[in-house]
Image (cartoon, rainbow, N blue to C red; front, side, top):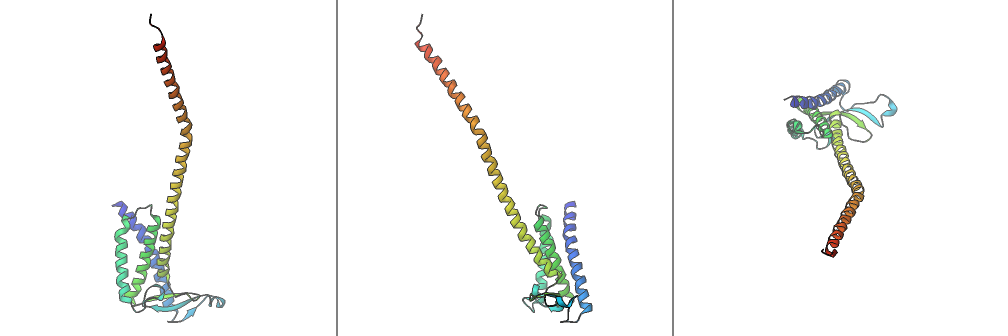
Length: 206
């Protein structure tokens, strides 16, 4: 029971921070800008990065527009799957646990918008890249963390296999002289036994 409490505290703690930050930033944009309006703290920054108030009825980064209901259902399904499987993930799988927490936060953050507004509020615009929000960024970073974690784990696994192989080679080098000495001692003992038997055969009987 304590394990489940600790696991869900970790999951909901990280997801809750992301949801709160996502909601707060969207509230700031909604209350200070009108739809389509752009803002940047310095005029020279406007061509490179800006805040723009935008409505998104599709998926992250503005793809698949006018599918709000579909993505709402998908977010609910994904959230349930994460809540169900998270306690079964080993705590050594830190990258998977962190990725699932970030993806849950992102999914729920955008789901709140879809249910309340019928669309998702996007506001971060960088260069010519699609407009996104904190929830979108959380989902994307979660995927990146998962991939990097898998690569890191694979690299460590290969390193461990190389270390085991090197240790085995060292053991072979160390034991080889010992085996040679044992073989020589056995050979000498055999010669002595054969010599003693030969002396007994050749000695005349009295």
